[in-house]
Length: 603
Image 1 (cartoon, rainbow, N blue to C red):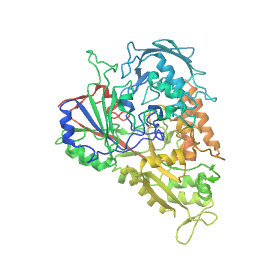
Image 2 (image 1 turned 180 degrees about the vertical axis):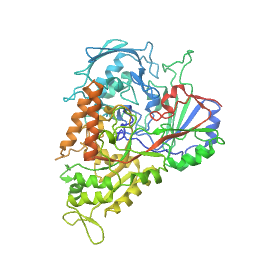
Image 3 (image 1 turned 45 degrees about the vertical axis):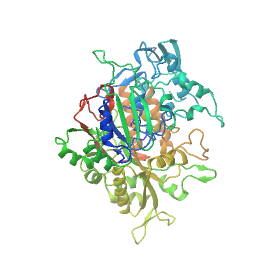
Image 4 (image 1 turned 30 degrees about the vertical axis):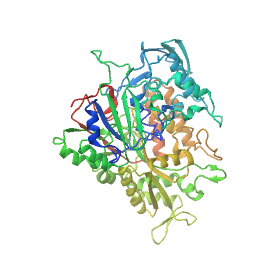
């Protein structure tokens, strides 16, 4: 939901280009730490953990973060999370012409796929033309490369085996960042492996590509260009990645990178088990992307020296956590997606604003986040130069029950003699709030939201459910009232285009049916919603930085006025890392593993 998370994966890809703001755990039954240590004696390895099984090993079909793709695939360029600069990756250089509407990339000499086959300009053209731009393939990458009001894709062609040319219909400021791989945009995929699946149809007339490299795939058949390739996968236990022998990076002395030979990615849903296994030495870090639960901070800080690890902290993590209501007025198979009574509440701006005023966000920081967090009032991360503050015109909703009740009364709601909130027709205001049960922080926040809203007479039926079930509701069935989740973020606002364009794949609050799904009749796009979409298109084609900032400032003002998402709080970026892990360059944007190719293990 999607969805981030300067980076597209920090939104997307969320997640919905959704980011899991959790520290997933290590299953006690999934791996024996002694066994891991024995194996580690044979090869250098890094043991991580994640919340749930991967949904796919096909990058184009990804729908969750964290995922393995920052380890297995690269794009033409690369964003250095430490400096924020765009650097060469598969392309050793590029030039721009015609007012930045034509780009020529030159690939590195001798690039190879993990099966030893040459990686050439034909792979680049295939990735963009046959997969990303293919109308028969549902991939979130489409949204970030639809240029202008017409949503036109760039034209791309090979000049020779190492050079590829992109021609853009108009200037497009985020273009280079979008070419920068799994953390920020589009990776390059192997034509010699995937082309047949793109041109061959299944029994339903869809490209077989949609079933390529599922979680049941033979790891030996998954061909990649990143630092690591998939060695094995045991469902509900672990994914093991091994060093790609054909990876292109070398250090200044000519030594091949990455230095660490193997990554073991444990799969579990328990944060407590993850903490236990880290403290006992079974894990090398608490969270690779800097989202360690705040409740672990105090204990780990006391154990830092004795436990032979270092606790890294930084500013508030990029991204958001928010409450959102289903604003979709559409019908599927003749039935409304949302109960019409509830829909009248949810689509009322005064109702959503009243909810915002009724949420005690400072108490969320003090209690749930134990003081280790900050208020979040915008869809754009505070690290971004496009973020605006309250002093710059951003509307904020400080805790104010009287203001909340006043807005509800203005909108036609009333209170009965028991303090329960009723609508104008006498219906009790009651709705279901969903979140992912694996995330203890969100579960705690959801419990506080339930308690806060009871103060204005609303009954919230809080229902934490499995993450995969929640994603299915948000992106497929669309049968939900409200949810509490998070998107990752970064410095480039356009990374969130698939969230804010009305037809975007992560536009969950008023979702258009995705490719291959049952149609929706009667879906309406609100005027303010369409305006945000137009501003995102305008912001992408505007090269002048002052004008871009003004455009994205206006998007923030609109989102805070109409509240399709009610932003809550952000924890600080935190992670604990074993002392034996070297070359860590920790920061809020990339966490620990953004420079995985440079990390070393010393035993």
